[in-house]
Amino acid sequence: MREIAYKTIKNTVKELFIKANISLPKEITALLEAANEKEKNPLAKSILEKLLKNRLAAEQTRIPICQDTGMAFVFAEIGQEVRITGGLFNDAVNAGVSEAYTQGYLRKSVVTPLTRKNTGDNTPAVIYTTLVEGDKIKITAVPKGFGSENMSKIKMLNPTATEKDIIDFICETVKEAGGRPCPPLVIGVGLGGSFDYAAFLSKKALIREGKNPDKKIAGLEGKILEAVNETGVGPQGLGGSTTALKVAIEAYHTHIASLPVAVNISCHVTRHAERII
Image 1: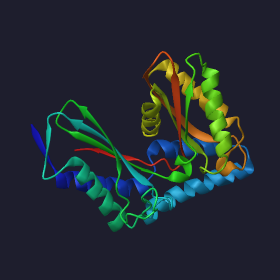
Image 2 (image 1 turned 90 degrees about the vertical axis):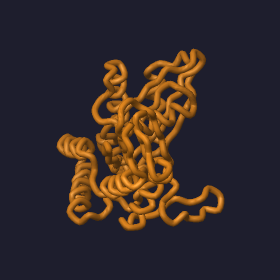
Image 3 (image 1 turned 135 degrees about the vertical axis):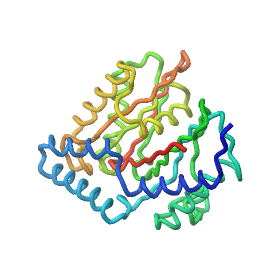
């Protein structure tokens, strides 16, 4: 049994959220650069170039890449041979988020749902934990902006739904959103499970790098990306062939009577940072 201290978890979370708000993941940067090379629409290309300059400026100045520094989401894989000392895991995560957003001078955007009173330190975080083998903890910090989150949707399709039905639903979601989620987008899709689990999968899909290891699912990712980019929404909703940079699908078994599909929309500032402790 390996012991990991409350303070270690807190400090890790703090450092990850500050880092994630300043630096784009390498994969997203590479996708932006590739899109800029391919884009033919002059206005769209100009926007992509500005997004790349903004990314570089954020890293050089250590200033957040977007003014919406997001609500804090944490994915944690906790080894079953770990014993957390000095306090509860969730308390350590929230303490780390609090320090990141106060000491790191990040915008605090979390409010109570009805009174809309700001909590003052961007807590509480949304925390997803999974028990895994081993004696380590993997923490992924995800600051998620809500201009794009607000454009997300879920639909309970009939079990007879085809790939075309899935693609059409996602394209309709993107076209209805237009420029509001600040495209180019990263689109997370949760396929299967239940109403709630599909939504979780769609959020989890946003932090996965590369294609789905299942060839059939990976093929559907490519079809959706192609269809979305044919909508013509383009960067910032002003036209062009780069409406989305990536589509990632996470799938799970579901009931014979349904086919849940959740679409979690994210702008190009799809930020996350991870560490194993």
